[in-house]
Amino acid sequence: MKKTKQIVTSQAPSQSLWRHLPNGLSLLRVACIPVIVWLSLTDQHFAALVVFLAGALTDFLDGWLANRFHWQTPFGAYLDPVVDRLYILCLIPLLWHFGAISSTYTVLVIARFAIQLSAFPVLLGWLKKSFNAKPGWLSRSAMLIAFLVLGMGFADQIAIERFDESSAAENIFDSTMEALTVIGCILEIWVLIKFVPRYWDIIRGRADTFE
Image 1: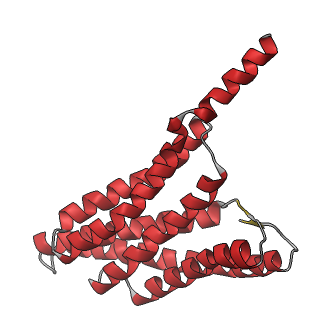
Image 2 (image 1 turned 90 degrees about the horizontal axis):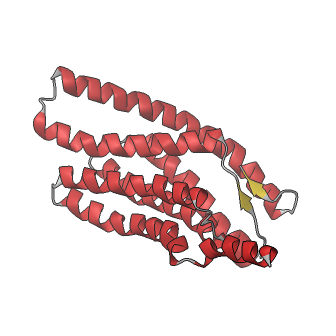
């Protein structure tokens, strides 16, 4: 009787509707994308920054909630990395359009994310191969820099309105952005160098995990 009771108790959290909250937060991040684009194109840059930060916060919350309350699902394991890349992939060209992000970094990010996202239709849809994703420090660092660059890019639009181009604040801001972008470019190239051979190994059946 005690054993049965324990089984029912351990299954209760997985039956709760709250288990869908992390996936809901991921989808909310997708919903933020058109709002941010519209706010930016209508020169509501402060509001665009606020919505971007709110969307970025959901990236932390969905993973924390899933791990804290054991709300992980197979769907969520694929959804979260896809949404992260879509979020950045859609906003990077927007900030490039405003001149806030360099062309080199923009191209590298788009190239990496396009290749990574292609794994889902190619491996799951075409080749019917399942795979695991265990991002290491390199991939996490590149993603963190990408979010920081985006945040700085949206903040830059506000700084342009409030500071003179030659002011000390603007110079510091520009120098920080350039440093982050250089670091980001190095990390993007490094991730691609590691990812592409692993992608090929998974296609040939020699590996099953992206790192």
